Image (cartoon, rainbow, N blue to C red):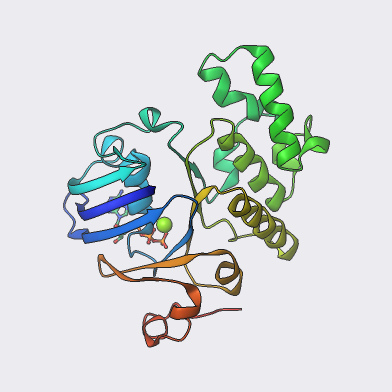
Length: 245
Ligand SMILES: Nc1ncnc2c1ncn2[C@@H]1O[C@H](COP(=O)(O)OP(=O)(O)OP(=O)(O)O)[C@@H](O)[C@H]1O
Ligand SMILES: [Mg+2]
């Protein structure tokens, strides 16, 4: 099944030239795709459209088609897309708002009025799945960068999103944090989760994780192929998105 279908997508912010100028691609269910491109190429804009943030909360002129698992996205609010797509923010401190990991995990389900006993079971499962059991009563603010990322992922996973988008999950983390998050991404992949990872640069880490690299440049998809195909292409060097470690 197709997870994400984008067809002839155009978008411009008010009083701005077009950021996305005819974008087409399809991501299959279970794929891990790294979305790369220079700063300002429109990565966040594109993921905000997929999440319903644009044009519902951030306005602009949009045309074209975006479907998530066969359902049209444009015009739906982020709340209406709960269960379809979830975003793990670049800055975990912006995402994590509660003073214990347990409360953080309960937050989404409580808003959906799920029964407390059921929420407790869901929390137990998530803590185990994301190796967070020992942090249950800890304040996320006091955890390491990598651990915060895991709490953020566990918290968005509570509502079983069909697609998870990570905005620069490796940025700002130390080596241990990067290893932790990379392992987590591999576990999600093994579990068949559909994932989009937004990254500035194409790295050895994402070459090992990604099924395909999706490269955005000048409002278009400049490349969409397996890392081993793209690593030998001149394009990535021309775009200065080459291998950085
Ligand atoms: N809310 C906004 N209003 C007007 N212009 C915006 C807005 N957000 C982004 N832009 C512009 O749209 C273009 C694409 O920005 P976007 O943030 O999507 O790029 P990006 O690839 O995510 O960049 P980065 O790698 O720096 O995060 C840029 O020219 C940016 O200045
Ligand atoms: Mg961005």
